[in-house]
Length: 158
Image 1 (cartoon, rainbow, N blue to C red):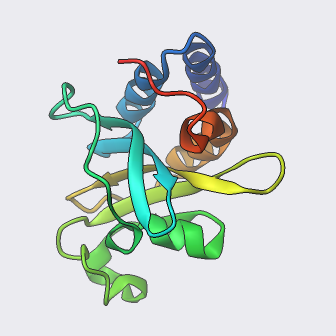
Image 2 (cartoon, rainbow, N blue to C red):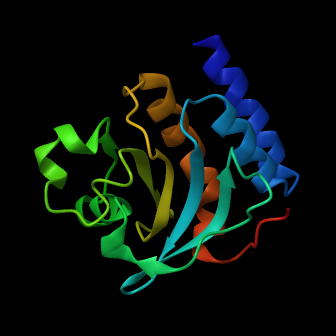
């Protein structure tokens, strides 16, 4: 638990210094997932606000996609976390378009103090990953700090 508190503090310090992408990179390094991101929900679109790919750290964002093409749709539709260890073994995503491509996902909503959901904070990968409570807990701890990114009030620094 101490390591979780230390990680939260390190990430919070980076965010407070407007080093949001560095915070995401640090958080990603604590997981086994390849990707970590802050996404913003549009009406029908999902756009990356802050993105980190451990295999391509120079890649700063992803293309805007239909929200239905991402597992973030489950976060949006249920207004809560969505955890997926292996898409090929989970009936909840049997009809999802990215089921064979994106095999694992761990995401939480980014909700402001008025209850408005602006987007999601998530980890995902092309490979299945066992669900680790620490990954999920850290996302939940950090999510409130990243609402401004999803809300569009701040653009991430490189």
